Image (cartoon, rainbow, N blue to C red; front, side, top):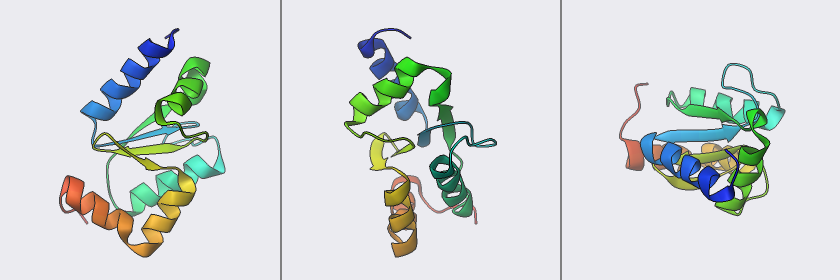
Length: 112
């Protein structure tokens, strides 16, 4: 992926074809930063399957996700195509119950 429009199309395709997508450093099995690791833990806690996309594999993607969302940090979480936020927002939403509510509204009950 080289140009910004191509990267934005890739991002749009991924968030449009997966219920939950996390653009992260590393993979769900091997997060490469604490913030990405925390997001993986949160999603695993709620037993929600998600697709992790490693931005460290492609510098253009790493920068492109930031311009796509107008959000400067990684990880970034998308649920049903909607940008939710990063690690801090996910932690706050998990603690307040908002994240579980969002999952239920967008995805239905979990397989807990």
